[in-house]
Amino acid sequence: MRRRYAVAIAAMIMAMPFGNTASAAEPTLEQLEVIQELLEANDVVRLRSYLAENPELLEGYTDLSQLLVQFMAESRNVISYLGFGSSQDGDSQDDAPGVSIY
Image (cartoon, rainbow, N blue to C red; front, side):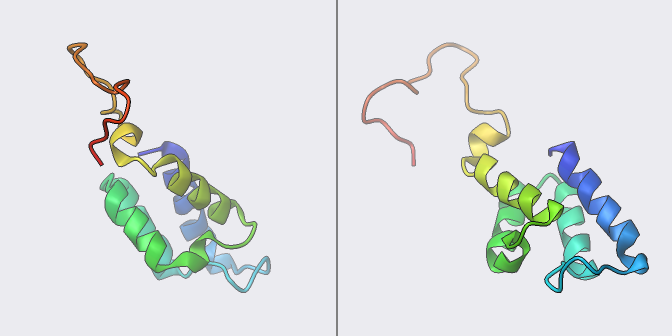
C-alpha cells in the first residue's frame, strides 16, 4: 500500500489528543484506526468499500480527505493499482479492441 497514506493516518492518530480546530467533519479516532488497519493489511478492496460507506471522509479540503480522494481515483482498477496489470509472458491481450475482462 502506498506509504504516504499510512504515514498520514498515523500522524492524525497521534495528533488526536491535541484537539483540532480545522473542521467539524474531521474523522473520528475509530475511523482513523479502521483506515490504518486496512492500510496495514494492504486491503485495497475493503478500504475502498469502507470509504464508500463513509463518504464524509472524502469531503472537504483536509490533507486526509485529499489523500483519500486520490487513493479512490488511483485504485479504481484494483488489479493495475496492485501492479498486476501487465503480463510477464508477453501474451497480454490488453490492446485488443473491444475485449474486456470486466
